[in-house]
Amino acid sequence: MPASRRVVATGLGWTTPFGTELKATWGALLEGRSAITTISEFDASGFPVRIAGEIKFGAALRQRFSDFAGAAAHTLYALSAAAEALQDSGLSETSLAPDRFGVYLGASKGCSYVPELARATAAATQEGRFHAARFLEHGPRYLEPRAREEDEYHHPSLAVARWAGASGPIGVTITSCAAGSQAIGEAFEIVRRGEADVMLAGGTEAMVDPLSLAGFTALGSLSKRNQEPAAASRPFDRGRDGFVLAEGAGVIVLEELEHARRRGASIYGELAGYASTFDAYRVTDPEPDGRGACAAMQRCLDRAGVAVDQVDAINAHGTSTPLNDAIETRAIRQIFGARAARIPVNATKSMLGHMIAASGAVECIVCFLSLRDQVLHPTINLDQPDPECDLDYVPHRARAQRAQVLLSNAFGFGGQNVCLLVRALES
Image 1 (cartoon, rainbow, N blue to C red):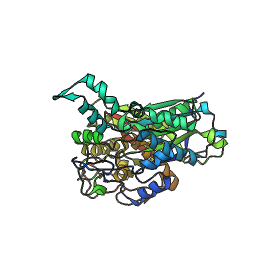
Image 2: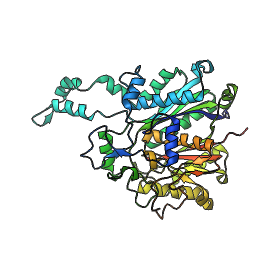
Image 3: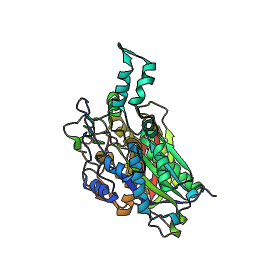
Image 4: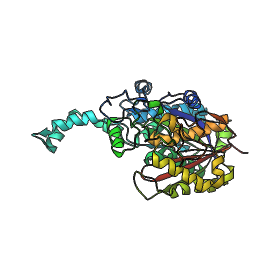
């Protein structure tokens, strides 16, 4: 089949700290509300960082998806977002051929079993020495094998496919902060190539746990504004001191245009461009000149057949780290030249925090909602703009905006760069 098949979004769903309803989170974002709070799901009092964007209703999700007993948190979040997206799309068994229906999700590990691992290690330690034989003998009573399996990166995709009855292409991306966007891009290519008519695509993350918090703290990546959680994530602000860890999921129903039209589907817009590049620089730092980010944006525009003067807004990666925000700004200026100052650039992470593998998917959903409602949510906490970050970041308040073409950036740890382009559907 030709690679020119057009791909549209017909269903959106997410699981965020604000809840599982599309309307609730979108309303909170437009109001400029922060989802960042003091961590309550485990005792973080001994950590230098004690704030995050937590999902506090995991027990309700576990009850809702009781058929997936023992599923790790990232799987539950993905199931919830996928269920909402499918319901929103209006797809039913009669309009879906299972072998033409697939799943592609970005993901990380599902949870951390630090307490269980600590007890198992203690049981294997004698006179200050760790004994592998004792660990094999005593460890299983603390470490449940099924839980280890459910924790794996690919389980959300498997569970969603099983739940939805999808027997077409299935995949997972594990490219950290770019994973959700890359999964959407790869699913887009699958539909364009004719290998599927419908794909559930997005990302899921459940990294608010002791091990992940300790790891990112050791890297010096996280904000330490523990006394004012809602003000901690502050992309492009002079006082930013790191990102805020968060969790959740975002899933989009991507559908071939004529398939959607035949069933009379409501269409949010068209996914028209996707590009992925790699910095080949450092694991934790973006390439200083922003070459990889520039290449991703330019290739995405070229593949969509869109000129720089046609872009109406950009949803930034905008992590609230000193390096990322300055380099992303630099890259946008290189691609858009003098016009860069006139393009609104907003940062969803200012309110939701950084959902790592889910962040790009959630931000792509934001772009489709901006197309629908012709409005941009604000970038909050931008009180003292950094002189190196000199674009229009839609500070403090939502803005009515003619939005026909939007870019969504996602730049991951390790140097992955992904750009997606969404636009209003043209005949």
